[in-house]
Amino acid sequence: MDPVGIERVLTLEGGYNFRDMGGYATERGPRVKWRKLFRSGSMNAFTAAGYEQFVALGLKAVCDFRSTSERERNPTDRKKLCVLTYWARDYSQSLGRLETLLRSDDATPQEARETMLEIYRGLPAEQAPAYRQLFRLLAEGELPLVFNCSGGKDRTGLAAALVLTALGAPDDVVVEDYLLSNKTFGHGSPDKGYAAIRISPEVVQIIGGTNADFLDVAFSTIREMSGSVSGYLRRELGVTPEMLNQIHENLLEPSP
Image (cartoon, rainbow, N blue to C red):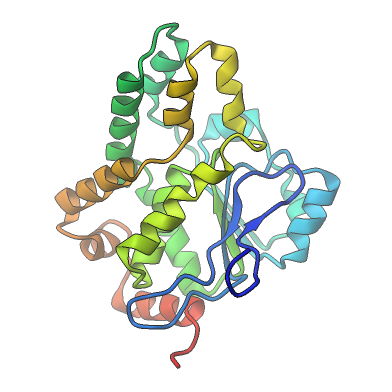
């Protein structure tokens, strides 16, 4: 539970890593509104009760960052979500090195770490179309909204970090939210299937968890691409000052 008594990690039956992004402090003072913005892993395994819990949250929009093959392999029943907007795009995720690692019987923790760092270097460019859509919906007030990928930690984790940064959250808060996925790892996680591929528990922990170094690499790439996070938001995601002001109004509590 959050200190104010509102649950951050929600247990939706059949869901994974479903979290409310409300309550976080910003450097200017206002906190992020509760029950307006959520992040999640794949929602394809919701039970009937899980869908009912989802609908009870009153969500209007879903941004599904999963690739075409991921959605085809594990389709979400959109009708049962009862949302006005369900956004996804057709693309193939660049996971060549990770797939090679998963097929290896002797993958090392160092190889797993290097693979994850490479994936995070590619996320800012690969996921720019998805992040652009997310920020557009936030500016347009399509709330409450949830964004997700498969594990809810990498593509979703960077998206959450970008949103919190855009809202003015300090770095330690951004990292805190990102690392929270480690506490949900292994509890209904789709990554539990890694064990069947005969890779070591140490490797599973690296590729199935989050690490501040991974997020640092993504943000370093963003700065290389655009000079700063604000430059990336403006140039790569098309977030105008007017849109940013609207996002602040939509997602931040009124100033004291």
